[in-house]
Amino acid sequence: MNLSYPNLRTRRNRTNDWTRKLVAENYLSVNDLIFPIFIIEGKNLKIEVESMPGTFRYSLDKLKDLSIEVSDLGIPLIALFPCIDSSLKSNDGKEALNEKGLIPRAIEIVKNSCPNLGLMTDVALDPYTIHGQDGIINNEGYVLNDKTVEILSKQALIQAKFGSDIIAPSDMMDGRIQAIRSILEKNNKKNTKIMAYTAKYASSFYGPFRDAVGSKMKKSNFNKKNYQMDPANSNEALTEARLDVSEGADMLLIKPGLPYLDIVHKIKEKYKMPTFAYQVSGEYSMLKAAAEKNWLSERECVLESLLCFKRAGCDGILSYFSKDVAEWLG
Ligand code: PBG
Image (cartoon, rainbow, N blue to C red; front, side, top):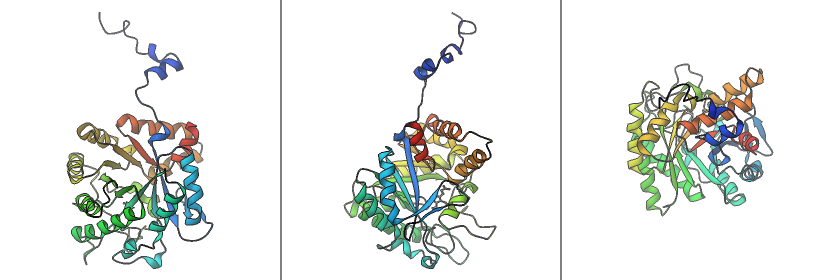
């Protein structure tokens, strides 16, 4: 039989809601969501990030209730990002290694109040450095790889010791997955997982996040191009994935999200690893701004975007919309 019109009418399966459901190849569930949370010092604070309406920085005393709320919604994992006081920032970002710092205390709060909620912590120095780079810089402003990796491994170990379940290095230094895996092994942290920011691009879509953690630099030529990937490249992302897998990553992350779904697809196809994407701050703010103007329907567009991450090959998505989405999915 000739498999063309009218024998084949592709619209038949689209006729009813129930057929559409029956033949759907992908779906979004609350199990796919990771919720990023910004934390600050202080008491009873919930401060909206100006460039991210509906996203807040929470003081630590609010973290317990928030974790319980997120966990009750069924979201499996949260990701913590610190916004520290500028007086604690230094050239070498040494506050990242302070065991009494914001992150270790936050980890304890989450783990004590919600032992069954997964907790992921960010490994990078940008929230802690005066210059806003993710590592140690030389006089020319170049981020020194091996020196940075040494510090990041220590930062990762502290997070693991305090109870972080997933270490997420977002710095893009070479060799950091191997170094972190090895320090975790040596210290008997055998089940601490690593979600590698495998293909993290030097993207301008991170702008609102840098507002949120206070790492935004005034200099117009500020960028992270000597360590984050060039948006022009995709073969290189496969090399990054090969290295991360061989160095001991348990999960791979691609970032940003929507403009980089081709990268998600390639990495998933080739490595068959648990693969995630980060719908970053700029993507969030674009959708929010359009929704606020009534140019887009927020709920429909957010759900559609997240479903597209699944179709591309994501096992889960980091999204600032996660809490809303969990509520919408009911
Ligand atoms: C930094 C880091 C960034 C994001 C997560 N971790 C920004 C950057 O690399 O400058 C961006 C997340 C977002 O935009 O939502 N280590």
